[in-house]
Image (cartoon, rainbow, N blue to C red):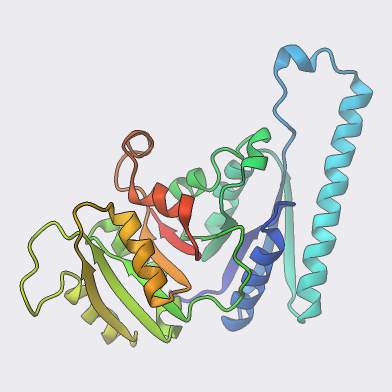
Length: 277
């Protein structure tokens, strides 16, 4: 898959500026159109409390939210203009997760930030980025709030389990994988015993090599440690700057109750995650 349309979620959160830098770098490297998208969400106010708030206060609040959106637009366009990148701006009123899921269908990849607890006061904030990953139908690149690099994708780990979600993620990430200097296809705690001289991910690795990817297969086995922890540990050892993986192998409610690889990676990711569902 070539990357020609990139959409990045713009907000006023801690990781916003770094997230935009990543988007600009990727748009420049792939000669892609970049679109910044902003959601104007009103804080969640219980109905019994809202009726007690004067109309002029509500109007002032709406005006302040619009002014914040205008500043975000100016900052975004200033950053893109500085590098000579023509960018588009979209702004809608409503919950961020709903808007992103709806609008990202025309993009090759959507870039969002890691969950920000400060956004929980807004509709859709508590479900970011989980709901977007599950509902948009497009690959989603999640950037950690503390990530301050813009040259990601040089060293990539693929979290492989042979599932349809992992397969979709690999092919959604093909443009990144083909440009990477190093790709490790990693299986954490394979279900079956691994024979000497074989790797559980050897076939998908051979497939990637035929597509010009500098890939190698590997696996880790430690039944006392959850796969998500194993993957992050190995990612640190290999100095990767991106992890590619399928999202949510179980129903979302089961992941919340039982825990899962997706939630662990989203909660503890040190590097960006490219996820497909």
